[in-house]
Each structure stands twice: as structure tokens, then as C-alpha cells.
Image (cartoon, rainbow, N blue to C red; front, side):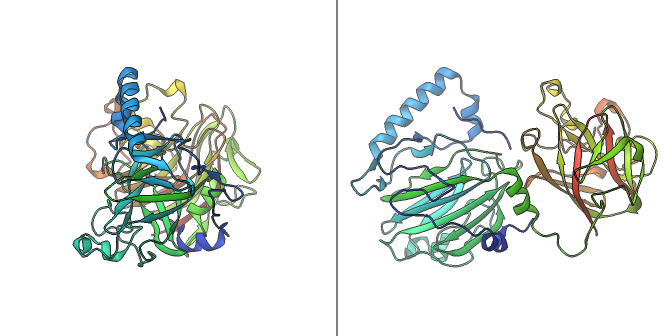
Length: 439
């Protein structure tokens, strides 16, 4: 089976413009850089699947999973077909057609055509959904059909993206084209060349207390009424491009903390760090807190980091300048190769992005070791929010925490200001493009 890991920044219109997108082509032939998920001939690359919480699939025994897969596939073959024109056709019933491959960050083209009173959708990372429906059907105006297709319909009412920005559907019986960009939990959608969802968070419908899964399949929803699909092309977005999309251009108020050349503006364990190819790196076998000379209260910091295997470091938040940042400062935000086998027995409050020993971050959103990760941290009052590679993995109020790992007190937790820095633990973890905005 495919593996799904539980898993506010300017993507939006600017990214769509500057990315110079390639137009999707006809006849199910992928444009350069894209792969055709549907070949126009058969159901290769797809299987039938009943929609349900991905965690339930993951919890099935191998025997139960095999039986369920077979039953869903048998069901799908009764309701999905490829016609002589190379269209993928569903009669409105049956299991959802599901890509064999899971996807994380991606760009997706998909063409669709529906019948009157039709209702369908596209699931991303096995999560509902980009809505498709008959925008002329008065029976569904109360649900928002008159606003058009393409909204993230299962998002919470009132949240960005739930309704499309404009009505962009073509008249019934004509082909429509989605262009979808998914980076982290942020979704941007064009319908027929018009921006209709602008960098909105796709909520985890299955458990809204948790972030969107880090990856998962594309699914085509069956919901009554014939649907036709074609020209389904996908391009996986590499880490460097994803980081640039997520960061965009730093908004007004951000200032660089590191000049890429030397440690001007920094103090503390300067001798235990070095500059390598424009990045700050902790020297192997060395450590300690390298911190800014200026103190900060409330702020947003943006940076990229690269982990070696087993790598361990941390972000020192409101550090007083001496002592262990995890305890003497407001907190240390872990920077850690959490998925390394040596860390399999970690306390959850030690995982990457966690406020060390106090608040656990969601796991499964780190890029593979050796790739650069993008992270944004917002510190405001007693609250800390950590966004890793476009997904919020920690959003906590430290003033409400009363239980600590190993019952160890955190006397610096209530600090109102302090230095920002890096808490090295002997591994060559790298940091670059560090900028900060005071709030």
C-alpha cells in the first residue's frame, strides 16, 4: 500500500505569475516536466478505493487490506471506463479512482466535464476536497453551488479557500481545466485560467486537530451523475522550488540576521561555529549557544536548515545569554533528524519543532536528510507557532503548560525578551537565509 505520514506565505497569484507555467496539453500527452497520470487507454496507475480516514487503511492487517483492496477494485471496474475518445468516464457511482502513487508537494493539471445536477470533486493527499458541481442547480445554491467549482468545500465555514474567489466554470457540457499547486498544507487553484483559491490551508477533514497529511494519493470522487476526466498531469515540486514558493519575498519589516560571510552581529559560542558556503554550521564535536547580540521580544523568524544523519541542534528563543537554552531561555525549539532509528524512543516533546520538554510538535514533515527545509517561527507573548515546509507543526501557549518531560522545571519559560540563536549539540547542522521581523 502507499504510505501516508501524518503529516502564510506568499504562494498565491505572484507564484502563479512568476512560475511561467506550461499549458496542459490535449490527448492525454503530458507537457515537458510532467507525468501523465492517466494514459487515455486504461486504468494503469490507478485503483479503486472506498474513501475513509487514511489512518484506518494504515491500521489494517495485511490480509484485511488485501481483501479490501480486491473488493474496492472489483467495485471500481463496474463504474469506471475509458471510452473511444480517450476520456476517463465514471457513471456517478462506485469506489473513488485513486492514484497508485502518493504525492506531497506537486503541480497538477486535470480536465473535467459534468452533466446537469452533477456533483463531484478531487481529493488531495486523500483529503476532501476540491469541489466540482453544477453551478446552475438551484437545489444546491444554499450549499454554495452558485459560487462555482474549485473551492475547498470541506474547510471550516468562513475559512479562506472554502468558496472560490470567482465563478470560473464553463457552461455545462464543456471541458474545464484545473491547475492545482499544493505545497505543504497550502493550496492554490486556477480554474480555466482564473485564480479561485489563493494559498489557502487545506484542512485535515479526518482530524482537524492535526495538520494535513504530508503526502497521499489523488482521488477522483464519485457523487452521482456522469463525470468525464482527461489530461491529468502531475509534476512533483522539488524541495528548493517548494522553499522558494513558501518563502516568496520577505515582507516589509524583515531584516537579515546573518550576512552569509561572518558572525557580525552574533555572540556566544562563536568559536564553535563556522561559515560554510553561505551557511552557519556547527563544528563537528562542538556546540553551545550562538546567539544574536540584540534581544527580541515578539518576533517572526524565517530560516532554512539542513540536517545531516542523526543531526541535532535547536533554536534558542528568548535566551538570556547563559545557561542551557532549553531551560534558561523561553524554550529551545528542536532541530532534529527525528526519523533516525536512534531516536525511535524519543519523548514526543523532543521531536523536531517541539518546545523541548514542554510541547510536542507533529511529526512527519521533515524533508529527507541532506535537503534544505524551510521554517517560520512566530513568537508572540507566551505563544509559539512553528511552520515547517508549509505545514503548522506546533501552535502552543507555553503559559498553559504544567507538565514537563522528566519533571524538569523550565525557569526561563516566562521570559518576555532575550536573544535568538542556535543551540548546537556537536552535529554539523547548517542554517542559512535567516531573517527576523519584530512584532
